[in-house]
Image 1 (cartoon, one colour):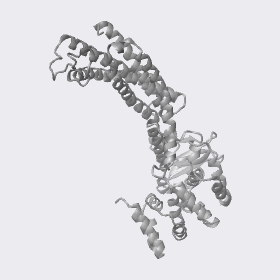
Image 2: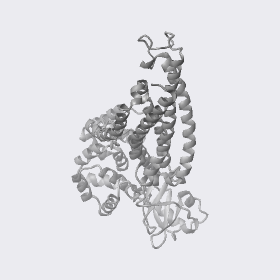
Image 3: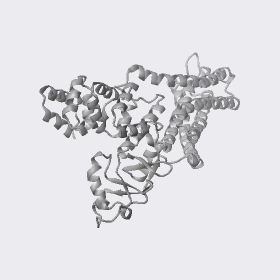
Image 4: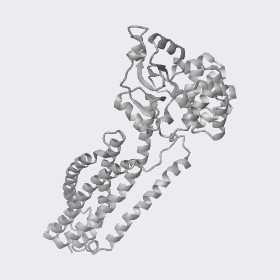
Length: 490
């Protein structure tokens, strides 16, 4: 399918309004995906266009497009609606979609919607709004098909024909007993291909169904869809009675939302509620500022370590060592960052849990040993080349006021070789230790934070940077002091 130009589509919609071309407008809503129409409508500010759309387009199509609009546009439309139009919109929307856009509305609009909503719908909305945000109960829908286990196949098919259009899905039927406790599921194809119309659902239902509880974390529930290859899942209470369902499209939305939150946390930015272009600049700034301040405060520990190092004799005697401090800190942070990204992804996808700590740490220590060895070996040769080519110069080895390099031939002395190799070894050994420890700490932090039921993406990554910076500086100081004594570099 060709990519749709939102501005062109918006222009076409406005044109159908101006020409009062009902058939053309209906064709747009029937042939173009809802999300594309919604994005096009974001470019239209004339409320009259929306009033016309909701008057002439089938209620079902209009409600589906409305659910895809931004909260600001939804608010604008609701404010322009009379009570009758608002009721029609609510009656053609799924309860979970209604709850989604109510959460972003001002209290006055929420009150108005609840006031005009039919009693049964109002009760469902209130029940979903009362569930804690981020739980299965807060994202489930109450539009599903539920039948008793004693219902016959013939009766079930007739019931689906009668009520199916109002359900979120008709492909899975949820079966309960006389106490409303869920006892199984029946797929639509099982009903269609049943050998006898008079057999009961109990005889053909699936008894190995998967459910979640209303208070389960939404990310855990979404991962269950992937694990068990589900398209829909029942949400039950502690007594096993079905309260609602979650469909695969809801699960995908949850995984995208959680992934965006993790990416934002790893980038030290609070997640945006709307898209980047729809978010005002001051809100974007407010999302960034807190993290910058937190990282600035955490940087105090690095400053303290640098302050102590500056006052030690070893760096006064061998000032060239100071040149490598940024490289040490960056490399330690990079190696730790790679590991922590793998840990956060693994924890998010349930590849492992904090209970697998020893399996994960033992594997990562072997990986850290290999990575650190390669880094140290490469850095030893690279830093030696830097000193011989004059990229980094050591004032202690200046000859006749000029740096000794391969370009002037003054570097081919025993003293230069001993000092430059000792400096390279000092930095390379520090990189080995700091890179190894960075990977180990990058395993311990997220697993520990996850064990405390906190989000490792938000807490662990900022702490890792500060911890590794301090470790790198302390290790560098200790190794430099040892090198000073061993190689008599002063």
